[in-house]
Each structure stands twice: as C-alpha cells, then as structure tokens.
Length: 162
Image (cartoon, rainbow, N blue to C red; front, top):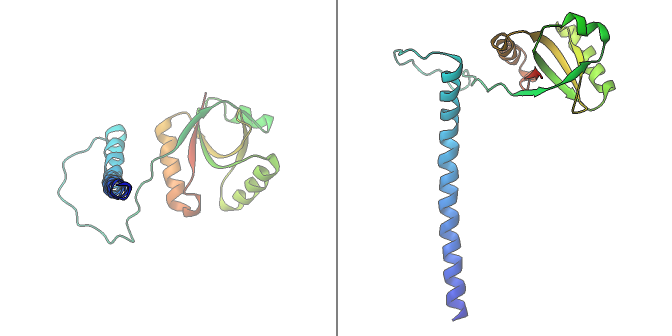
C-alpha cells in the first residue's frame, strides 16, 4: 500500500514539474515582446510600416531598457555642484563602495573622452557620472549612445535626483 501511494506521489510530482517548466518557457518567450510593447508605448508613437527584412542575428542589437534609480546625493567635489545645478538626470557609468575605487575609475574614463564626476549617494555608494541633463529624454538618449559606442559600458544607467 505504501509503495502505491509513494509511486502515485512521485508520478504527480513528475507531471507537476513538467507543467511548471513549460509555463516558465512560455513566460520567458513572451517577456521580451511585452517589454518591447511597453517601451514603444511610452517613448514613441508607432506608425504602421511595411514589413522589414530581418537582418542576421549577429548584426541586430536589442535595445536594453534603461535602468533608473531615484535618490539623493552630494557632489564629491564642491565646484561640481555649481556646474551641474539645475540637472536632475545623471548618467551613471560606475558605482563603488569606496571613494578611492571611484576616483581610479574616473581617471580611467578621462582618456576615453568622458568628463566624469563622483557623486556620493545617500545609500553610501560613490557613483561615477559622465553626463547630466535637465530632461529625461536627453539623458536616456545619452545612455543608449554610450551603450552602443562603448559595449563594455552596457550597464550604464540613469540616476534621478530626488
């Protein structure tokens, strides 16, 4: 009797596991389409277009959503505060728990054409900022430009001043 109950239990677990795996696969397949639809609704007006020929997968670069975070911060250098007065959107290219590491990273970015500054976040992190903007659309455009021009900075994100 115990063997029958145990066997029935094992079979039910097997079937339950298969269904949940199938659901996860279906959800993962639908997720990029949902994100793409949401992004086009928020940032652009979609117009009907003729179907385009698909380029090879190696040349297509999907646009990753821009991560944003809202927090208060102070400028590491006092003169930076006056330069960036009126800016609410900051393009962050690195985040560190020590000011020494943030300053080392800042020095690495200068030869690449960036003009970085260090921000001290309310969370205790030191954010390395490369640009600031008064308008969110301009800041998002710059994040995407950095991501495409410098693939190693694909995790660039947007800090919104609280």
